[in-house]
Amino acid sequence: MRFRKCLQFFQPISLCLILILFVSACGEDDSFTGTIITPFQITGTANLTGTDGSRVDCSFDLIFDLTPIDRPNEYAGVYRGILRRSVRTSDGKGFSYSVDVNATAEARLFRPDIARIEVPTNGIGSNSRFLKEFDEFEATMDEQGHGSGTWICAPLDTDISGYKDNAFTINGQFVLQPVSSN
Image (cartoon, rainbow, N blue to C red; front, top):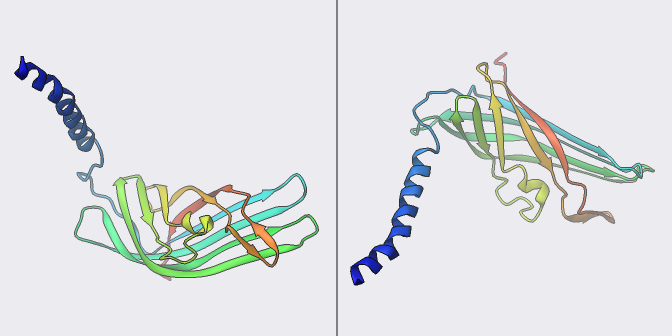
């Protein structure tokens, strides 16, 4: 009787363990070989015009210079560029914000057509949802090294010159393309 209760106790645990192993085995596939053409550039925009005539414009332009590392389909290196957000009322008043960024970056191909690029802002404005949205990009890639995806232009969560920026989250698009060596 005691043995049967012990089995009943461990049966859900062993089932859970088998499920975890199965999910892990079905996760990322390192068996393919892919290439990220580097250096590459990611540019993105997001725009919104409110019903009251207010306007939010966001953009970024980042250059990545990465090299393969010792793990399959992974790259590491540096990036640099500029991030921008402006908020204007219908009469044109408001603010513009831009920040130059440069730091380390990593990229990984999860499949031949999916790349994830991690670009930590290294604590610059760490309380800002705007800057946190630039920590990671996921791009659908083609064989020529071009890619695209979506990103979110979130508020700065601050008060600049009397204008509070804590609203207006906008969905945007980005493109990734190799930088020509001319």
